Image (cartoon, rainbow, N blue to C red; front, side, top):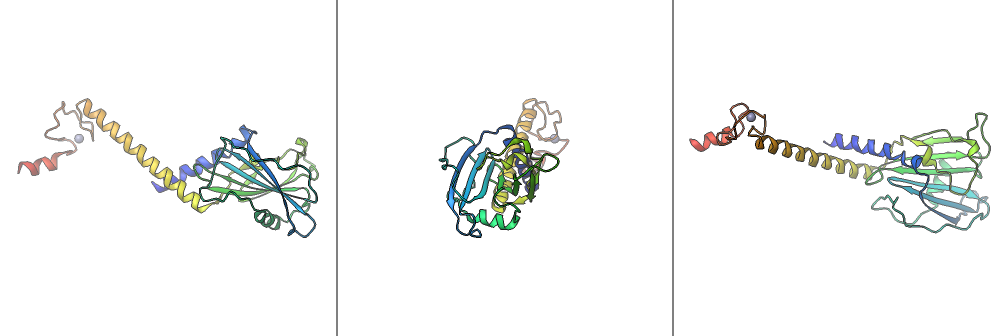
Length: 243
Ligand SMILES: [Zn+2]
């Protein structure tokens, strides 16, 4: 049952990755922070959050100066969550990701951490899109860690900050968020058990309603007192009662 729960969890998460492709509309918030720690050259960092049902993307984008006013956070039905997560966004993850990817053009690289899962976020991947110039094949340079990124068309244009939805290009993220993985696996295992129990209960009561053995459907003509001669249902306890 746990294996089945895990399987359902993965299928749900990988299906939810497709949600940002279907709906470009997301719950979006953009904040700008002073970021003195990154080599001293880029004084600001944008942190953009985009959320869909079961998909959460955090983008980090370095800049030397303020370009837009921050967008206030809006309440949206597209919300998804980790129950233990602090609402405060930090630049530390952004700085860490820039160190991991070491982009050639830090000014033009947008790095994203995309997490997926329902009811709790369960898998994640880190993605980079460098939109300084389109490559010869007309796409932007991309890089993915623990996931796969599809083609990012260079003709789409540049709408910084924080509107390159990397989640729209992500496929099969596979780095587990362990607590989320455990919660979801347990959730789907219990759900599967409940549905299996309910299906069994319905099947048994329908057979008894038709006068048949609930276990093997053997015709008992509505006479359930002696149990079933075919599969032994209720036989053992009846015999001991007679003796
Ligand atoms: Zn039977």
